[in-house]
Length: 165
Image (tube, rainbow, N blue to C red; front, top):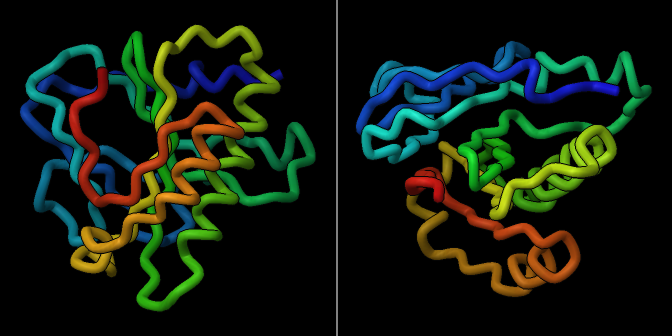
């Protein structure tokens, strides 16, 4: 058993913060907005109840559980909401399918280790800091519907994470 929450760190109270992925085989980290170009912005509205878990390159799922699949970059949560986040830096196509699979793989491991998780809301964010403009124009309604129907997970494709419930 792996307790994902034992890897959590509190996020300092601030209006907004960034999750930074420098794509260097290191865990993602919390940064100030503007400290790096490789950022996903989180609008937190000075709330003090955010916690952050770097998943990929941090939680040893592959070593402990023998996982051979890729996992997402991070989990952000409050008492009510848990949010799975995958950050890509691809210019081309195919990143949404890859990121979706990483979210679902992490969700499987999470559910296996936390079968009684009581978060009321579950979200997933697929982010790509190299395609900022294109993200706004993509709807992916079918993919979003299947995530909700099959996994009870709200799916967002955006580089901005709005305040969690």
